[in-house]
Length: 636
Image 1 (cartoon, helix red, strand yellow):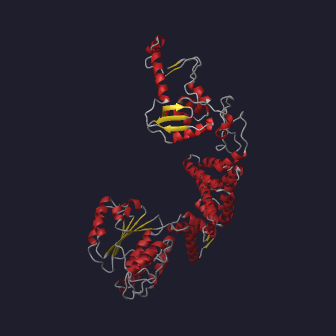
Image 2: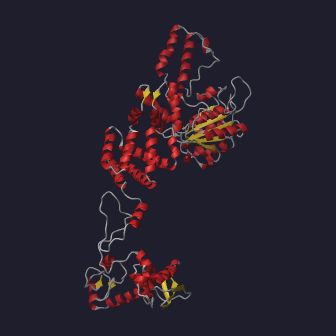
Image 3: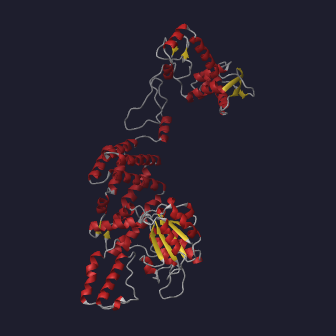
């Protein structure tokens, strides 16, 4: 008021200061204060607004910053909690706001400080309130961050204990004008350990006139001792549909013509951040000169046309690799980044999967018409297993492209794999084909087709075995065991005979269990009594009894004895082998060889007529164990 009565110069300075305050303060245009009318200025002073007009523009992120909780979008849960708390008088001493960038943490802190100190402008009595539609006595100063009782501190540049000590000292004094002293600390996770420890006592038992509001993007870096003293609010990412509607309203206020598809692209590119979406919209408006189209936004962001991405996805799912590579090359030549193309493909795969599970997801306002219509059609035609496989391949391929020295070539190889995988049957389809196909002829056995596939590649096959060594399929053994064996079945008089029968039936797991985990107590035809070695599975006895019944056609009784039993077959074989090795070492020729080659040792001893020790192995494994020559008797 004093400056307004000092003459023309003072009046001119007051006008310029008011203009600067309007330009620098966040929020909507609030107008000039009514308390201090400005006297008429002389002619030279009227040119000040014109001179300041080039810098009068504020970016959309600042111009449309929310000033009350009604303007805050996407945070309904937090607003409801605060409204109920304020109405019941349950106001916490400290709040901590967390969330990703641009969801409104600092803005919410300022609005909350305004709600705590709200007083009607007409001087009527009132308390803390979330109904901030009418500007209160302290609202303007709080919004413009210049209120003496609402102090904002950036913890990124004030990290030490000395900065916190100043807050602790000033917190003892009552507020100058407002109801509460409010301390807003942004990026609070940047405080040092000493600063956090110094704040704990004041934070736990602050004076009744002090409130703390913290904001952070890294909630995990905040000590749990601080979190336990605060009321925590997690600000959510704003949904793309809500964000698109918000941007549409801003464009209407700004008089900007923008296509709905362009709004969807901007909203989805922002990834739930309101500030990012407004910054992108500001850039798109400048790029389009007041008229924003979808193609301009795509070129601005380096994105591919959504319709062309869907065409590429369709070609891949049909296995048309030539068409897919041509489409990818066209998009790449148009300026689209290879990693972004694969990311768009992954996004569309996720969309089709969602539409398959939840068809109502097609009503999302953030979807363009092509995604809504063609995505629903593909959701009906593609199985869940195909979509899951495509998602996994694209997720892995994006990382490969980002790390590859030549991203375009790496992306093309990912597309090739994806297109050829489209011909591969899913596991359930492969099983159905196996059941429908006849059993292959014994002359050309092949691997089960669970690992085979399409794409025209040859299937891996095993080398043919001699007719006498080729095993039957296990299913045939189980179903035709009684017909394949003689009527009376084999006679088994020892545990070694049982192990030999398991080897003949190609059940190597059971053979190994008989040799290493059973100690014979009493064995006769039709009855086996054994002791189990420590750690042996309890199901071994049941498996042995069941399979002996199938293989012999007679009922066998297999039981576990309380006696210790004799040595296992493996222990007997090891003892015989050790005895042979000790005996052969006494042979003069062997002793001379061992003396001539220090460090040599005898690893196996066989007679010329003796077959390899493990008769139940497959022929390829027998050849491996047979040694380098048929006439070798000793292996070193």
